[in-house]
Length: 441
Ligand code: S3P
Image (tube, rainbow, N blue to C red; front, side):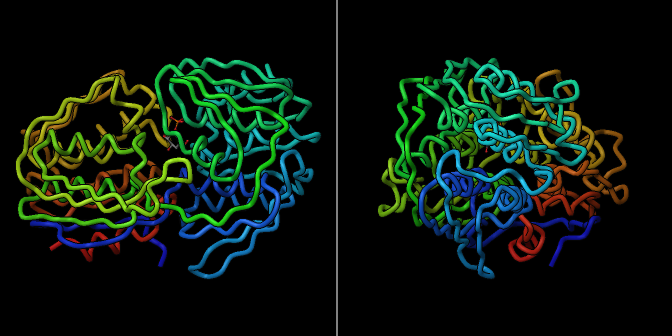
């Protein structure tokens, strides 16, 4: 069932249950893209069901990749080999997905044809110079409007480079490394701070080689990838909303099995411990070999205590997508201070502005900072549901993680709250609101 655009969230006393979450979005994009560049067949189980990864599959089909799907089953990709995609049969539409546009730009930049990459309104407002600049330095030519999509990528024979991005970004790292697979010589990305390493792990899983030396990651051109059967772990960033809710609501306990435990993604667990929750992690032994994919396991979170949480710049890359969920702790009697997170302003929405506006609308104190926010305590004169003075309305601004953060915050209200733009959850978690209804009481 597709979610409604406007959803009413009723207050809850607690959240209880065991569940699995949909396949990881970041890992699914990479597995699909690398399966297309591999030789032979790949079977991908638990592939992310959200619209973002559908965009990646649709673009790959336009580039001549044969992809078949079974309902609720694995997807099968017939790989074409590095540099062997076909000239696109039409525009490549990345929809709302920054990962699709940036990673695909890296791949088509190394092909002898031109590709037009477009996105929705949100994606067309997001910065693309961060991939245009290194890809042009490697030899491609990219037409854009003021550094934004649509992108017209004129592929070329690429030359390896050393790239030092100014902001930590796994998307930029991955775009340049994917271009590097198509380039002469070696390509190195030296990050200003470590970001999620799914690309590095996925390259190894598909039989490729990649060298990691501290913050420097290097790939060589001219390598071959081979098709593989892989299972995508549950998405930690989707699990985050339930983990936060369990930490926040007294009497709560949530157990999530089969969830990704990549160390570059799970900094939220430490934040929840600092907040006062009991957090238990069990790694599944059979899938924990780091060079053969992604560790996964079971996470259990129980409510225990409510303490203020402060998050500084050093922690931000490890929980960039969890910051909206973390903000919801501030609606449940907590107090959350975040700095060094200006990148939030160029996500699917300006997440600093959207979070602050949404939490205020819900009756929670919220202050905007150039590079973060302070959220916590009930606003003295708010008319929102948290104060019980009437129905509050928060606008998700078309951003999936805003819709889910507001829903978790609204569980603390005295009256039902309304979330507008709630259908944005289709991007990463189509069944979010059904699961919310099932777990809360
Ligand atoms: C992603 C990287 C992050 C993250 C995004 C997914 C990825 O973006 O916010 O949701 O899959 O590489 P940046 O790399 O731009 O920080």
